Image (tube, rainbow, N blue to C red; front, side):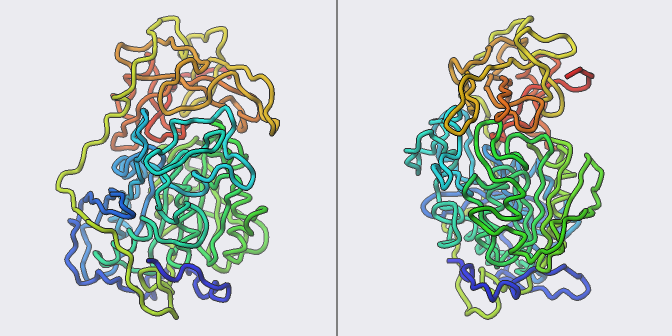
Length: 547
């Protein structure tokens, strides 16, 4: 079991991260130094290991220059909901910088214990994803209730509305929240890697996107005394579940300014879930004092310069002068997707911040200076996979629901929309989207749309038209979400139907040509709008339209 996580307040300053200086840095060798690596250098190796009776997959990239006697930093990148570890490696860009910056890149894959259609359902149990109702009630609206999101392999989803939406397995703590009993899959994975590879224990980091960004927040809270820095990418805590670390962890969090799936500045998402704003995560709310206090930040906000400033309109802000590690938030011109909508930009922004930091007090296996030596808590039945498994055939189990119609819905705005449609900015383009009215308001004063919100698979009679100009065999299907041309569409009663398409990633982190074939003529499948990161939306780019 990981030790040294529940530390008293007087140790907080001693366990602070400090800026990395290559001229003076003294690496701390993990238990794996001197051992032969089970992972081949210069390539990614897939492996499996068991924790708590469940067998997890993870991918490890060891740089070409790896030496079993020379400690290297460790970066873990956690995938979004429905995204595999293999796709996460392709899209996030973390491996791209492993050679340049000299670190080991690891991609854990969350549990998939959901038997319903619409998978794979890889997910992370963190930040209240299986905690509804929470301290402020249900974490989703009644219209977003989704029984198919229940991971029946380990969950008893008896909440009403049904807001649970990830596995219930122990992946960092048994409940996915809190700061005690930190003994799940991810802490054990870190211990296992330390025992197998020569890792600099003062330079261990965590990162991830979407649901993996949520996991990044949770891991940074629960493994604070171990981690040198964290970069949660477009993630958050569910409303009422915000937490901050007991010892400092430098953090950089970023969102696209058009992200309505896990928004940065409002609580209610376009698919009907409640989150904590970045301002409350950093500055504190009714449940936590905030990351700013944990890192000893004082004074006013100021521009935080990065080498990527201005690219895709990126702008970063420091929350103050922080004696125990920077607390930074960034925004860029995009939606719910990797920075710049591409792997290289995202990997650069993430790795550049992480590599700035070191935590000299971490000695290995979660033990910090002043604590007695401990044994690691290792994964069991570790198997190195000889062949890299193929990606799942997304949508293979789904029916064809669309009727091909040259005059159908979801068309190109430059060619005119139907009377019941509006031109809406969608992912990297625009589309004609059928408008859905709202009726009364719920007990929280939130509009109730005349449709079924969200879904990872087709829902019969969900209030959306099923006609579009698609090719035969298209598996695209419509869902209803809070989507308009404002940053808080659900609260504003802006509901529209969008076409969902299967997104298999190419080498640049974009949906590939086969994904586009499911969309209407001239449209492409694009990431950036959905909770399920293995799915895109059909949108049109390259033409000017009037919104």
